[in-house]
Length: 322
Image 1 (tube, rainbow, N blue to C red):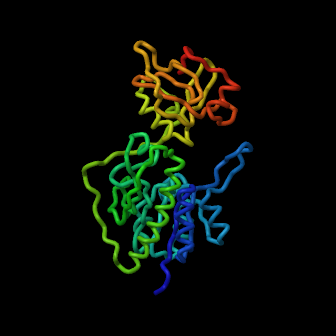
Image 2 (cartoon, rainbow, N blue to C red; image 1 turned 90 degrees about the vertical axis):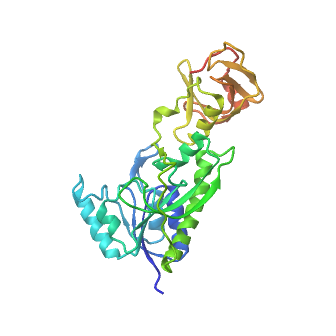
């Protein structure tokens, strides 16, 4: 049997892991689609995506259209991508965090259609930020779903799925890496099953649909009127982006790690007031309970454990954050 030919579409590290797994498994990848280079770093020079870096390092052809809509803002990009896709003659397109909408003509082009690696247990957390939102919501588990793409927002039939528990200490960064590895393994399994006709499709249930809306920078600001448990989850959900931050006067302080404080919050203490500073960290009153910040950062400074942070920036009981 001839090796299955795959067009791969993806951009960040999550997608790079899947492409690496497919390449290692021996699938033929005649074309890789990824987002155009973006300015990054101190010099803001255009930087290739992690997927592009992998593709170039392994001699894979790369296309970087700004759009795939033939009637859109960049029809010349879409037309060039269309020609490249036709020339690739792929059996299937694998999509992982690509960042562009696939129009109908793309979805219909490969013999086996387009398969998406989605970092949630659909239909929970359709949309842009399933990893962040699962942690923020306090979900006990998440997972990866291999989905047959249609024109809806993550509404296609489910082909393969596997669950993954969310640990109490998981951040978006740590959970991302676990899900990326799982997604890479599952897409290889899915394509091997598809090659022998053993990949049945299951429609998503109508119940339990939630949407993982894109993370916005303004969400970084900590609202101390929220319960401590909710703030602790948001600190983990927003690590590494956009981070969870608060203010002391004009000073912006980011909190990278925290835990529920054992300190009792006396009646009448306003949310955001520092209750105590000790070896464990900075204990802060919340709308319900208290939070202990254990890793902090000043603007322009380094992330530091609370003890090291406090040696260079004095915080004391009675001060109010936010």
